Amino acid sequence: QVQLVESGGGSVQAGGSLRLSCAASGHTYIYMGWFRRAPGKQRERVSSISTDGSTSYVDSVKGRFTISKDNAKNTLYLQMNSLKPEDTAMYYCAADRTFAPYCRGGHCFGSYWGQGTQVTVSS
Image (cartoon, rainbow, N blue to C red; front, side, top):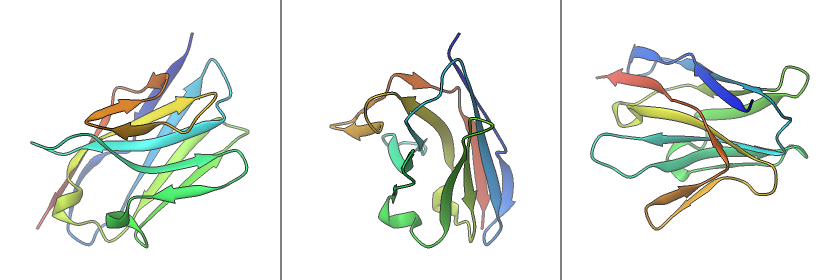
């Protein structure tokens, strides 16, 4: 059974750090990514990674967040540093075998999604 399970969320003060994990079971995914939905906003892709190591980041997190993947453990990570209150959101892991999960027109696409982990950053 395909399953993505996120962990590592929590509450931190601005400037702090968190490391999110996404444990994948059922299949080795080629494309994986992190998404978030902030209160009152649409879900957006934060970062993605493919098996060749290529990564992408939304502009608002560049230089602060780092995505990585342990293929042996089939686990995706998101190291988040210098957190800001605007990073407060529910963070989701997504995976697909054929394309990098993405969002367009208010909808996000990917075959598999986790349940999410809450990140709250206070000022």
